[in-house]
Length: 182
Image 1 (cartoon, rainbow, N blue to C red):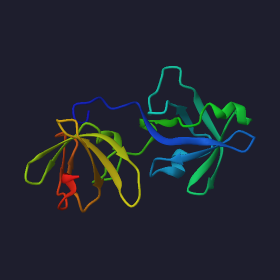
Image 2 (image 1 turned 30 degrees about the horizontal axis):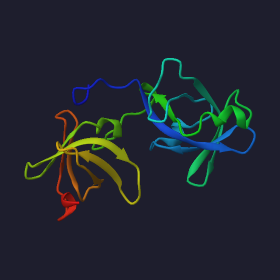
Image 3 (image 1 turned 90 degrees about the horizontal axis):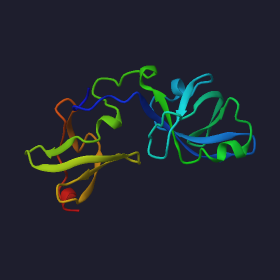
Image 4 (image 1 turned 180 degrees about the horizontal axis):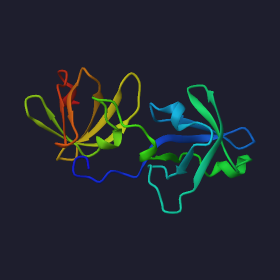
C-alpha cells in the first residue's frame, strides 16, 4: 500500500499515438524509464483506455517487433497485420503487469503514486492535492488542485520539490517567488 491506496495490478508504460503505415505498426510514445525491457519482442502488454484504465476484457497484446522511430517506437503486435486492425488502438494506453516491472530506484517513485498526495510548502502552507502528472520538457509538471478548486502546475524538479513521502501522503515544495501566485 502507498498513501493508503491499493497498488494497481498494471501500470501505464506507453501511449499508442497512431497507426504507422499499412502493415499494422503503431507509433508508441514510451512512458517508462525501462523502455528496452518493457518493449521487447515477446513481451505482453494490455490495451487500456485513453486514461490508463483497464477493463476485465482488455486485450493482451504480444510484441512481435519493435524499432526506434523519432523519439518513440514503432511496435507491431502478433496477430495484428493491417492498418484497420490498429486504428482502434490510437490514443489508448499500454499497460504492463506491475510484477514484471522493476521497482523504482531509491529516491524515485512511480508517477501514479504521486496522484492524491497533499502538497505543502517547506513552511508548512497547504497548497493542494496532486491530480495529474504531465511529462514535458524541460521538467515534468504536477497539476495541483487547491481546496477552492483552483489548479496550478508545479515543476517536478529538484529545484522545487524538496521531499516526496508517499507513505505519509505528502510532497513538500520550495516554490520560487511568484509560482503560487499564478
